[in-house]
Length: 168
Length: 275
Image (tube, rainbow over all chains, first blue to last red; front, side):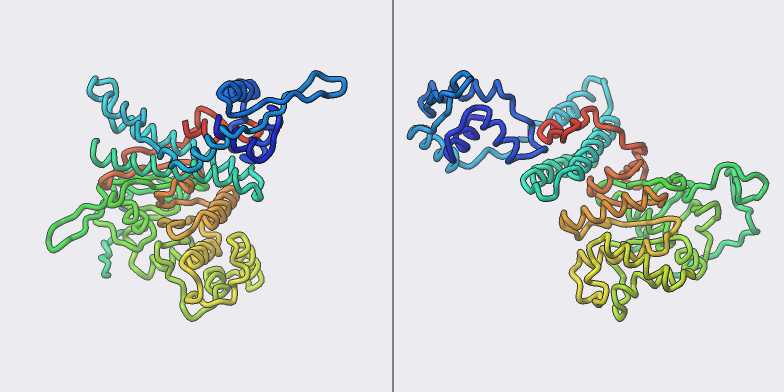
């Protein structure tokens, strides 16, 4: 959450609720709606670390609101985030652990585990299909996010086939 | 490819199978569109028998959409090729719409395919010297549809697959993904009682795959029976039922259930879905 908020503030100063709305608007329906409490907590920490500066703005008939600005240190942190490669997916799959460990104890056999998992992945894929169908075709960011999830799921299924060939 | 024609007295060889409807005595539930009994295919590779399909019992009811999945070499393509009469079974039985089909000769199979089966291959087998439009209309015309009906059906199918402006092109002028979609349109032109497809999205990018998914969903809702081989989970997830093959045998056969976590009303949540 920290670098996302820094990136949004690099574009323009904003208050907490505007940041929530910006995330929702940019990433669309496919992204989990950010929790406003979490945004304020994160902004508080960023302020304590000197990466953002809060400015009280008076509002008629309302309590003051805090508008957050990116500081020079915040800009540096954002640059560093943009410049470093992002961690790739890590194969530390809970299902794989189950597949290897469960048969050792006689809890379940691998063929059953794999078949059940395949059906579950396909059900998830069906959900993603429906989600893509409900998403505005003009919302390219959301559709790409969904497509990314589909491609990951496809890789999981292909891997399941390999597990079935070699382990069962 | 030669085909032996075991002699059979009309309607004999129906061992252990309850024939409903076709026998005429009682029109209860409709016949399954496809039924196989202990279906086996063994290829000969330099005198060495290589089993590809090892005793498959598969029953597909009218209107069902079945996806066949499994690792490469598990017998998926061989199975659907046998169901379409494009590969000869080694032993076992194939019944289509309540009629024994594995004992048919090549010309009888060709007739059966024309009347009942639409087939989409990995390679598209379009007629090279005919336009896209004519390729798609041909099966409907051969089956006796009027030119107007055939044309309307063709226009609908090509439109659904984003190919309207390619109707006048020759197959050779099309990209691979376009040819594959034309092959799907052609297979559906005739509203066949059975659509067989072997990796129908194998050459498509994701946008074209979406068009194909939408069309498959549409014809399925209209009652089209579909059996398709795919490793594409987007395609398989549309099916009512997924049959998994491993080493030529069915190791799983069942409905694609609902995921435990449903997307929320507004939209859902990809990250959560990925779990």
